[in-house]
Image (cartoon, rainbow, N blue to C red):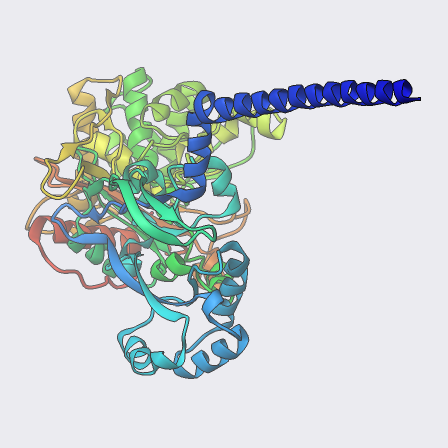
Length: 625
């Protein structure tokens, strides 16, 4: 019995010892695994977890760059960055946001647009970040809030830089404006470079030169707590500000061109023939771009969008009009360049022209005809029949080839967003677009700048500048130079130049002499703008809005105002050493010599004589197109 009890105790000891050993081994293995894991975490992966820890503790805050400024050629500021003051609400400090907004509205006006913007931004911000409830506080509103601000815990006035256009409507189409980045733009931009930026160029120079103007984002490291609140500022990288732009534009000339055009619908473009620099570019009617910066209200935008006069439409670079008789000098040059005619060869005008074997009459603007005319008189008197015959003799292919050299039918490449290229019709274009063959009569219509032939005022000004400088087409440019920062040297932009193929000086002189007599000659269609101060070369034009029937007569008095002919004029001065080339279109303005030419003369007076402009009379002098 005792032996059995002794053996049981020995067995229990062995069992206990075995279990203890097993437990010890397990403990040692566990400690070893823990030690290995600690070694991996603390030594092997130390850098990785330190980075994760820092990411939780240190946040990279973007520092948006300051947008570049825009100046005219004389240093007049066209696009500025000005302090803007916004009323913001920090949600975590406000117990009842609706009640707070209601009380604030008694102190400063808060519109439905303000409320919509606030409600849209509220869920996108952290509770300790200020959300704007009212933008662009004026001095009186800031003063009222400063007195009553103690009543509104969590409500503060925040300052930021906002875009401002000092010249307002005078540069709305040319300079353009910035607006808040929308979803479509967000998909196209480099989001990292726009971190912290809310605005982007929408139209005009602001859009075309966005990369220059925007600059590059900077950053700063900030130590934050678990809720994201900034506790300490650390290292920072200074943002690179956008480049300043200096334009060829002259604001005195721009204002004078706008005054000369007045309230009429149309456009004026003035170019330096030697540089291709755009001296003035006006589209009328205009609009104030400043409300677009902070976000224009729906009602205000709808009024602009639905206005029958289309103030948002840039007629200078997007308006496509039949150029009418303003292309006759280019058609004549094509005839000389191709050898189809000579300057002295006469063509008879009996009031109409008929294609061989056809009964249809293509009429001249003078129903009785001009008789026999050589090239110069045909341009001076703007004889349609002469150019019907010339276009017919050349054929559409040779005609198109020369007109294309003056950049008709495609954009000039000017550095402004939204330019259209007009239309230089051809048999290939008609077959492709309309699936119909080309008819010989259409060539005649192209010869007088009508039908499907379309050009923008900028194209007409650039082509006229090529005649003024003797055969060099220079790509029009808005920006003359850029500058990295205040005090840094200006870096000029480069002009693209290409010669027009026909370089026979006699041909160019024939065209210039004819355009001179359009203004200076006794029978010239623009004689009313003749001046003793300098000599002008030009060409008037009238483009039809609708087609007059074969046996009908156009009577302006009986036609609705918006269906009347457009008035055009192109010209340059002084003839001996051209310093300015101008193109003018007045929608539904009637005769070019009566309406458009005086506007061009006023612009030339401003540039050449420094003479301020008074809007010309709309009276008709009875001259031809």
